[in-house]
Length: 338
Image (cartoon, rainbow, N blue to C red; front, side):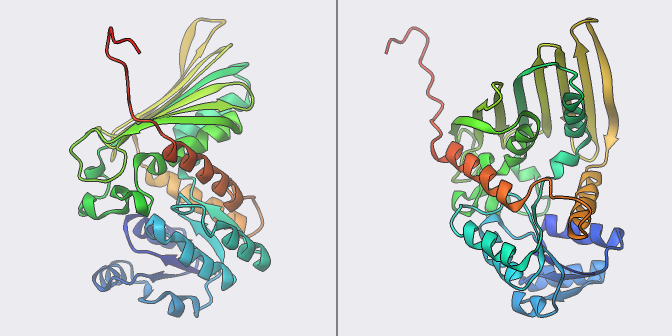
């Protein structure tokens, strides 16, 4: 099977290396930047192209779109029209403009479309989902998720000010970058009926987008949720807590390389906490490998995408609603009357 990875940044490099490690087939790269292209060619010994047209002329069966967010749609549409299965890094695009055209092209070719959902393969998220599916909480009532990580530490060796994460018009800002939390809460709690957000830029980071946000959710099943996101913590923090009539589930991760993962459950009938999962040095690349294995299974017809292109567009619409209608953090001063 012939694979094409479009974009040689940090996530593109990861997927290239993982496809080679999985012995998935003939793996090629498309990267317009000459120095980056040469470095990856030397390091990974893959065939590389400067132009997407030349890369697609090689007729890859599957294309991974790993460009900056605002460049996703043109590359994905060209790949779909060339008859390739599609894997697109999240979010599917920086806006919904053009997504219907992409969906139509993929349907016309009868190909699979999957959008990155690597956090669904994280042991913390997977443990909570499994416990919820088993009815451990009886009736879940409250979902709380959080993600906090200092933006300059995200991509070592790259000036964060030059990354798309810093630019609102390129799909940056913590609400779209924190899309995984909204994705996996929908996976656990069901569809969202209403969404609202507060967001602001409170740090000295040189960005033109929000660096902190609180997203509030009402789920169709009746539960409520909140997602706390920011670009600010010097130690990477991530986790989720679910409160239900039968107990509590809590996952917390700290750090990166290594990452400490702890998942615990509280049973209301016994009054006891128990460990459901504990890893002192989790290798985050494991979830990316599992994600690629899932995509391969989808391409081969052995599985259905966990996050299809259609569902990813609905997810993006929710996130854009939250971002575009977010209110500033405007808290009344103590004693102030309005």
